Structures are given as C-alpha cells and as structure tokens.
Image 1 (cartoon, rainbow, N blue to C red):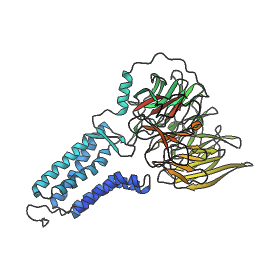
Image 2: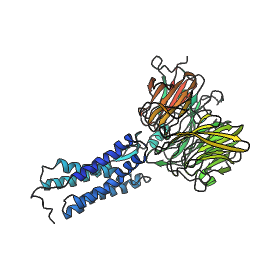
Image 3: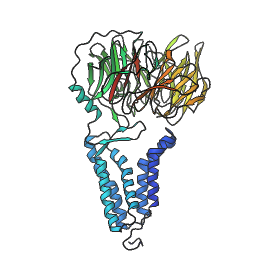
Image 4: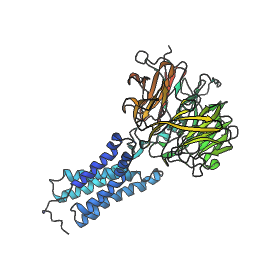
Length: 580
C-alpha cells in the first residue's frame, strides 16, 4: 500500500523518532544529574532502556508513514539481531544475557533515527539500503563490546568483548607474582591497629600518628601500587599486615599483605563468585580481626574464620543455609562484628529474622532475630544506660539486640520495603544516632534512646530531607556531620539538620575519614583522587589532593601508622605520610 509520498522520495515522519532519541539521552545522561537517586531519575533511566524502544516500534508501525513491508522489516532489523547477540552472550556471560539488548536498543535507535535525519536529501532506495546496512552494523558494534559494570556516574562501562574480566586479569597477574616467603610473625597492637571496618569504633575516625596532611609541602611518598582482584570492601591493618577481600578468577579470596611492600603473605580462596551488572564481580565486605583470627563474609553469604598468622581455615558456614538468609540483589555486604564470643552479620530473609550471630569459636548459629528482610549495612556496637547492644539498620528501620541472646531490646520502625539501606547508624553520643535512607531521597533522622526503668523509649529529635546518604558513610566532628548526600559532599548541623555548606558533586559517590586531632577530613573521590578538607562548618576548604588511583573507587580509604592505604576494584596503593 502506497504512503502517498512523491516518487523517489521517502517522506518519513521523523519528529517522533527524534523526540524518542532525546528522551533516551535525557534518561541515561541527564536525569540522574538533575535529580540523583529519586523516583524520577530511576523511572527515566528504566524508561530509556525499556519503554522508549517499545514506543519506537509503535511510532514506526503506526505513525511514520512507512509502507506495509517497511513496517515489518525495519522493526525486525531493530530487534532480531539484538536477540542473536544476547544468545551469543549467554555462553560467555550467562549472568547478564539481557544486557546487550538493554544497551543495544537505545544505541541502534539513535543509528536508525540519525541516518534517516541525515539522509533526507537522498533517494528513497539509497536511504532504505543505508538504513538496513547501518542497523546491522550497529548490532555488530554492540556485539563487539560488553558491559563491564558502570562508571561512578552509573553509566555503562563498555569494553571490548575480548577483554579479560578484571578478576581473571588479577588472578593471572597474582599467579605470576614472585611469592613473598620471608615475613615476621604477626604482632597485633590494639592501641594502633585498624582491625575492622571503619576502625575500632566503626566511625571512620583516625587517631594517633597519622602523618603530615600538608601534602603541598610534603607530598605522600608512594610505597607500592599493584593490581588487585575486584572487591568493594577496604583494608584492615594489624601489626605490619593488611587484610582485604578480592575476587580472583572464579574464587573469592581473603588475602594478607605485607603493609610496607604489598607482598602477599597468604591467601585463602573459596570457589564461589557473585556478580551483578553495576559492580560486577567481587566480595562487598571488609574482614574483621580479633583474638588472632580473621572473620570475612563473602558476597554469596559464605562466612569464614581464618588463622590470621597463616590463613588456615578454622571454620566456615553458609549463612543462607544456617540462618535462612536470602541473597540480596547486590550481594551480602555486611562486615562481621566480633563481640562477646559472637560474629554478627546481616542475613535477611522472608522469615523475619534478618540479623544473625554465629559462635566465634565454632561457626555454629547462636541466634537469629529481628525483622530485617533487605539490607546491606553492618552491625554497630553501642552501650546505652550501661547495657551493651548491637544495632542493625535495614528496610525495617533500626533494631537493637542483646549480643549474647539476640533478644530485641528496642526498635524504631521506619519501613521502606526493598529499599537499599546500606549504612550503619551514625553514633552521636550515648543513645543518640542518625539513621538515613539515601535511595529515592528519603532523608535523615536523629533519634534519642533512653531507658526508663525497664522500658526503652525511642524518640525522633528531627528529620530532614536535605541530607540523604546512600552507601557513602559520614563522620561527626564538633557538632557537625560531614559526608555525602547523594553525590554531593555536605556539612550538616547536628542541632537541627540544617545544611551549612554543600560542596557539590566534585567527589561523586565517595567516602570519608576524619583525622580528629588535625580537624581534617580525608575524602576519597569516586574517580580515585584523595582530598584533604577542613572539618569546619564555615566553608568547604580543600587543603590538598593526591592522584591516588585510577577508575571507579567506591571503597573506603584507610589510614594507619602514618600511611594511607587505598583500593578499588582493580588496583591498590600505599602512601607514606611524613611524620610531624
């Protein structure tokens, strides 16, 4: 059936196609910058990948003035090659078979509409032939790349289909490295060690001999930099050793390094692997050291206890099998808390027992309790009114447990089913906490917990939507909160939740430490750079910066004994700081 267009010309109605391409560009590149982590930006992103391609087919079939054959073969060329690419991809990357289609459909739509726009002066036959060739070539181009996670801005990181996976490259490089055979015995020093996630009190506060932070006058000296297996936890430091978790090939590994040289002392591997499209492969948590043992939880839920001296296994348990845990969307990310002979982690699941404790000596399940069904935070130990307890933040809200029995002492219900709460509560003082939800801009609450007789009373002091950290931790200093609100780095008053300054998104989705004695912040930016910032509510003032790493860095930095240690999913480095 003729479309009524002049002979030799192809009078396609293009403006709907141009509008759809603009919507794709907005959803993928602009919405997240305008309103990060909101329902609007999430919907725009999903629509760009899934809804717009459907609308593109509807436009062409019903509204583009195409002939009947054109209404059939053009949509087929738009969809079928993508299905072939996806089928090929299943063999190589079976965990993400739909990614080529999700990435390819918006790209080929841009090729489709772009060619029709640029070729308007040309004859119809040439435009038709060119369209067919370019759509096929577009899918061939899609087939030659693969998605290797995302950038810090959550945009697809596309690499050659034939490139090694980071975990495979790290495994090969590690196996070729000269073994580190001479090392001194492990000598812990509780006064100096950084033995668990975010330090001794899990608050990101650095004390002791930290070194000179005037990096303009005394630049940090690079001690070593080397490839590391993917992983999103950080280092702990015990004596002259470092411990961290990595993905090496198809094995999750807990690795012990010499702090001064980066030489590997030992590694313990388990044949398990977790991977997802955003972060790709690798464990999410940070090990914990206590009493000569290292406790580490892998992303699939395998909890191990190792001899810190030589890495030999003492016990291991699968928290899914033992505690009924359910693998979260982004993997288990809870860094173990060792307390009172128990190892406490988030386990989650539909049975309403989302926090679990395992016997530190045997790995046997001691208790499971609480209402957490979804979460990525780690346990926080506190003492209120002389009562030691463990806090866990999850989709339910905040819960407090007796570490020995798992009895729920009190809770604060702030339910957000399925929302990715990833942080520990921020401890302000005895019985005072900040809890936050950054996903979809929910905000931050200050709570006050007291004990009146035998009754626990939980009150909300204030609530603000102006500060909404997602997976980025914060520190507290002199009555103010310093940390991330989405991708913005801010200073917030603890008195009323008002924002004193907003440094913008320069650091991206980064992390922060507080060097308390110096009144300085050490900010790890998402692009790998490290900044020194004054911890003052007056203004955002940068004192120094260091080009520490390359690439997306969601990991926490760590400072210990006058050194700065940093890592991301591909490399790690150590810097010596000049001692004052």
